[in-house]
View (cartoon, rainbow, N blue to C red):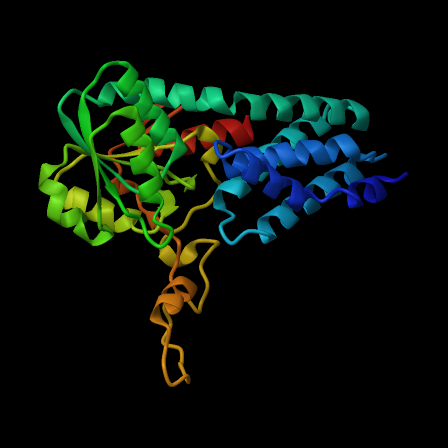
Length: 316
């Protein structure tokens, strides 16, 4: 059986969706790598070219299957880079076995990455602080849970984070941890900024400049935080570092020309709520000058340090 035939029977997108659905703690890049490992286990390429083409084709299918491919793409890029390293020194079978081993270790070690982020970031959480958190982030929840275990007492404002209201999920998790918290309207961040000691945001991707791609609303929050001279911290695992260099909101891979365009609406009545969901972006880009520091599993980094880490990974 050829590599194409065996891998063709495996639905890499379906496996990815299954992982995401069954494990609420798994992040898109980790699920992507897990799906690619499963693909490699089932295929039997006879040449390195065929092996590489199968993996690249699967990555393209994964990226095309989701409207938000930023963090998923980061996982695919990590996998392909590891494959490139191994392919120069090993046979196809040796590369396949080594890649399965490395990918499995990556998936199993994802939880440890979050623990490391929490270890580096939790010292910045102090008693009697008021923290503002935007949207929902697994790694931020881990950081704050660690601070709770350290018997630190603090309060948290959470943005509602429309359109999916993911801030409500974060509020419920913090409430169960015993952390005093309040959910605020996205439009109210300026109103409560004087009461805030620091801001924490997650990341769908950290780009080469050290800027962030994250849930819509992150950029305006960063602008307000800088105007108010409040520290603005990003919290992310290093496998979310992506090889992108956007210069504006319109350079993101998720940008569509029909977003917020003045399209004709011929219907007699317009469902504006549906229009909001259809025509608005879900992510935005925050330039590095708005970030104070990044808490990662590699340590506490300045935005410029992200480029150094990407160079190490892709060029060493």
